[in-house]
Length: 239
Image 1 (cartoon, rainbow, N blue to C red):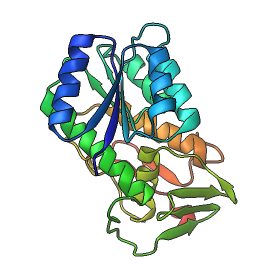
Image 2: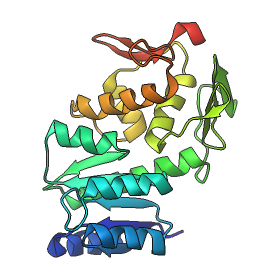
Image 3: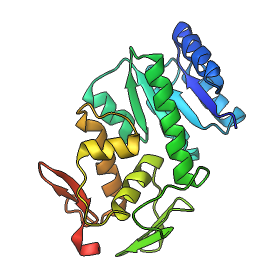
Image 4: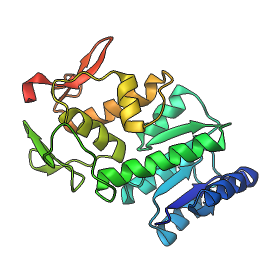
């Protein structure tokens, strides 16, 4: 199956370079050069398997487009931008982006990240091969939280919790490995399937957003506990 990518980049030279490379890698690519066109293409020519989204766009900002996409879909969104500060990363990821790659970047790295993001989303939604985990059950209930891995569904006290693909994979990692402590490097390697270079901001933002959705009091988490200076583990109280 040929995967479809929406590329949103206002620099036509960069857009053509990325489009050509991804097409050679076997992807079908639709391009948009400003915010309004991006939403029009997303709504009119979807569905897409991934969105590559620049932050600095004419007409409407990349963050605005990201928010619009998240109202419609959980499609993986990778921000591609020259704005390489922790504030911008937190802003983009906090609004629901799945990954962030800074300009300038290598095409080999970009293609690898695109492939990994699509594969993770397929695993999470059940469209790809089911991952083997430490628990063979396809759903797990801990306390008031139930996670159905086959249907990419999380319920808290019977109410559905809307998770992005990355948030779902992080939660699945902890729930299928009770008692195990994961460092940030291990979480990044298993969920992002990429080498960890010490960028804690990506992990911190995703963990904070996940806790805001599943914890009664995110400042005093029960489901995912922090072991300061070490990493995270599933809370003993819910095992």
